[in-house]
Every structure is written in C-alpha cells, then in structure tokens.
Amino acid sequence: MSGETSLGATPVEGGVRFRVWAPDARSLEVVLDPDGRRVAMAKDARGVHEAFAPGARAGGRYRIAADGGPAWPDPASRFQPEGVHGPSEIVDPSRFAWTDDAFRPPALEDLVLYELHVGTFTPEGTFASAAARLPDLVDLGVTAVELMPVADFPGIRNWGYDGAALFAPARCYGTPDALRRFVDAAHGLGLAVHLDVVYNHFGPDGAYAAAFSRRFFSESHRSPWGAGINLDGPHADGVRGFFVANALHWVREYHVDGLRLDATHAMVDEGPRHFLAELAERVHAGADGREVTIVAEDARNLDRLVRPGSDGGWGLDAVWSDDFHHEVRRLLAGDSEGYYEDYRGDLGDLAAILRRGWLYCGQHSAYLGRPRGTDPAGLEPRRFVFFVQNHDQVGNRALGERLHHQVEPAAYRAAVALLLCAPQVPLLFMGQEWATGAPFQFFTDHGPELGRLVTEGRREEFSRFASFASESARGRIPDPQDPATFERCRLRWEEREAEPHASVLRMHGAMLALRRAAPALRAARAATHEVLVADAGTLVLRREARGGPPVVLVARLAGSGAADVPAEMLRGVPPAAWSPALHTEEARFAPDARPVALAAGGTGLRVTLERPGAVLLAPAGRVV
Figure 1 (cartoon, rainbow, N blue to C red):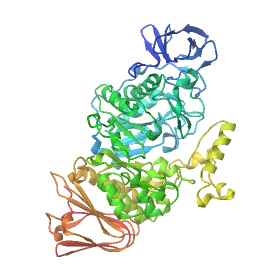
Figure 2 (figure 1 turned 45 degrees about the vertical axis):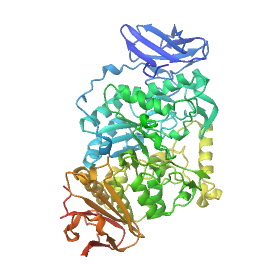
Figure 3 (figure 1 turned 180 degrees about the horizontal axis):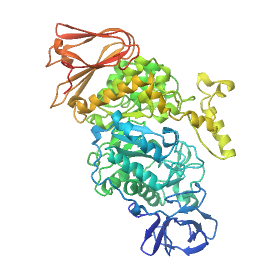
Figure 4 (figure 1 turned 120 degrees about the vertical axis):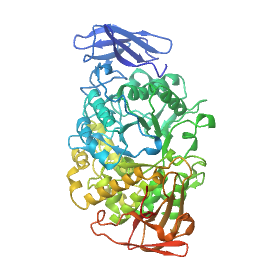
C-alpha cells in the first residue's frame, strides 16, 4: 500500500470513494447513515478494500463492517463527531478556502518552538480559542507553534498520546475546519505550525485500526504500551503505508509545517530500511513543494536520526536532546532518581552538551546498565532541540511541578537565558514564559474500569521513588481521572499582568528579540560558538557570525561572586569595550533587581553577580 494513496472517505464527483486497508478481511461493506444502506467493497492484492457510494457527500456519516460482523468507525476517519466509538463523518478538505499561499515557514535555524496542549492552553480549550491567542505568541517572539497530539481520543480530557482515530482532529477541540482555521491564522501571522504525531502505539480504547487487521501489531517486538507496531514483519508494508499516509494527511489537508515524532526509540524495525528513513523521505518528497520539518523525540542519542541518507542516516531534520534538560534540572533542582541518575549537575558536562548537542556519546549509562549514545561530530547545532520544560518533563513528574516551581527565580532566569542564547533550537512549554502557577499533570477520561487501572498504574509508577515509597505518599499523586486534575492545568492568562509573572514574560520577550536581531545569536549552522567553565557555578558562551559583532553570555547558574572571562572569549574586542546588552537581574526582569559589575583587567574581564543570573555582553552593548 502506498503512503501517497488516500485512505478513508474521499468526496469525488457524484459521490464518495472509500478505502480501507484490511488484508485479513475477506470482505468489507460501507454502512451509510442514517438509512443503513450498504455498499460492498472490492479488495485488491495489497489488502486495500475500495468502494464508490453514489450520492454520498460531505457531512454524511458511515461505518465499516468486516466479514458480516459489527460495523466500526473507519480507521482513517477524518472526523468522529460523536466520539471515537461513534460513526465516522465524511469530510471534504477541498471546501476550505486557504489564505496562506504566500506563507513560507522559518528555516530550521530560525525556529523558536512553543509547545502547547490545546485543551489546557486556554479556558475554552478549543482550536478557535487557541487561535485567538496566537498574536500573544508572535509578540513573545515565537516562530512555530507545536501542538501536542490532536488525533481523537476516548473521552474529552487527554494528553493526546492515547490516540484512537489518528486521522481525525479531536472533536472536543473543534471540527476539522476549526483546525484548518487555526493553521491558516497562524500562517497569516508568520507562525509555522508543527504537530506531534504518535506512530509507536495505539491508545488502549477506541483504536479501530487493529479491529480491521491484527497485522498492525508485531509478532516479535514489544513496546512500553504492549505489543509493538509491526514495521518489519508480514504485511509491514501496509502498516508503514498507513502511517506515511497519516503524516501526509496532516501536511496536505491541514498545511502543517512540521511533525514531531513521539518516542521513536519505541519504533523497532529490523528490516533492510528503517521506517523512519522511509517516512522522512516520503514526507519531504510528498509535501506538495512545501518545506516540512521532521523532528524525533528519541533519548538514544543516535546521530543517524539526523544524518542524511547519503551518509548512512535516516534524514530527519532534528532531534530532541534530553541531556540538556536533565543536566540543568540536576544542577538547579537536585533531581537524582530515575534517569537523572546519569547526570551529575556538572558544568563541565553542561558545556559538553552545548558544544556537541548531547552528553552521552557511547559512555556507560548507570540508569540503563549499558552504553548510550553515538558521536554527533559534524552535526550542526540546529539539529538539536533544547528545552528546560516540556510536557513530558513536567507532566511525568508525580505532581506535575514545573522547573520554576522548584528553583529560585534568579536561577530560573539564568537557565532560560542560557537556553535562548544557545545555538540549538529552543523549545518553550506553554506558560513557562511567565512562570505560570499552573502545573501540568497527567489526565485522562477513560471509562470506569480502564480509568481505575490508569489511576492505580500512575501511582504505582512512582513507588520506586523515595518521596512516594509509602502508600499514603502515593495517595497525594493527583488522580488522572479526576476532572479537577485537568482543570488545575489550564493556563491562567491573567497572571501575565501581575508580578512576579510579568517580569518573567518581559525577559523572555527581550531575550527572543535579541535572538532574532543579533546575527551572532542566529548563527546555528556552523561552528560559531564556544563554551567554557569559568568557575563551579558559571558558564561562558561566545557566539559570533558574519554581519555583526560577537556576543558573550556569562551565565551563573549557582552561587554568587566574580567570574573571569578569559581573553580567548573576548578576542577581537578590548575587555573595556564590552558592556551588557541585557542581564537577567535588571529591574524590568526582576522585582528585586540586583546589579552586575564589570571590571576589565589585563586581557580579561571580571563579571560579578550577587546571585545566579546571566549577562549578555556585546561591544558597547550593541548586538547588531
């Protein structure tokens, strides 16, 4: 089955064409609502069943019956207005009037990603209400919105990783055209839209693809969620084609500019060509002439993910680098259990991550009990996505605390400055820009029996952590099924107007404005940055590029006092000529502002901070 072949219901002249991949089924029928008319489908050699239903049209509803059995939703349904167990709705994407012909997404090196969950981003939790907030993200300096998965799921509250109807936008967020209006509005404001997609497992309820073929699941591979997806066994071509078709569906029918592939480490493929290489090639080639960015979430630190096919790689554009987050969190918050066991909170290690993109390049991982990672030599910084918060690293904590909930504000500001001045692609998680008071906790809306298992499993998951070793302590973990858990996570936009939130928002905006304006901060293609450890609490990062002056960031992440910036980090500019373009302890960023002192001496420069903070230095304080 070709990934370029449309699946599901496609309106054509005089009716609707239906196509379903079900290689094990002898016969399929389309069952049309409301009259129950049945249309037999013809099966081809690839296991694709096809039928034409004259008179059917967009807005009509239908199900698919296999071998005379029950009628189920279409595995490639474009919309499930009554929920994932209800009938599928015929959708005509050609009716939408796009206005984004002139839009061009930002280059990879110009990306500033903003990850958001539609249901908790606004009080209303819809595509329409999220679109109304897009001007705020433009003002902030974001260049791309990254939506957590929107494929429909059971219930009305979910992170999105329990996807069931993978081609259908979640009806609780709005209609397919509401999502198209969101993307069109973003493009009108100059924002790209990336979408998180899940191809490593199906959700535990309402995923009817497997009802039409057991071939979706591997006979030999497991995943953290049960049976692995069949990417290399019998009929794997059809499974691979299903997911390629899904990726192209979002790109073509919704004009998304990027895909973030969830947990690619769980996509086991021992065939001659890894599925990720096929997916990247077909999406890049099949995007109707538009540039599409494909990013992997993968903690294995595999360089081949982002190396080109000509170099033996799989050809993805970028990869999330957990090492940056983990090292920063260990340093600032002291986390040491679970995967944090592999990190020391050491500035030398953090400097190595900034130089090459990740820390583990084949060293032994105590957490995994085996070597982890490969050598990323030669990979440009723009191939790595860095963050100090994201949905996983906040939401997979027992109580959903954000970094700024657990560290002093000055240290948080310093960490953000390091993130936004680093040459790698920065990602912000919704609300971090104003240090929101809202947590991000795990929430679901499953039926009673599955919901009970989810609640019990969630609490048992943390039993190996010292803080939750007792049953009474685990009882404090929010119940994912409780609507209050979901409501607690909604952003409170009114916070942005009051301190201490307003000053944090101003700092994010000012940092991103400098990142956009300064040639040195935009140079993410070549080896244009250097980093060294000045003392036990301070890193020094130099960035430079043609067309503008160099800049130097002095980031004190711990402690206080003086740090010496050596001559090699100042070369080309006399020490006395450097002055702050911005520092995180200014009154506009810190209600309890603290001064920064500079003293030129010999060939170096001494920078003194009274507490953690970051100073961006430039000749005469000018970055352009």
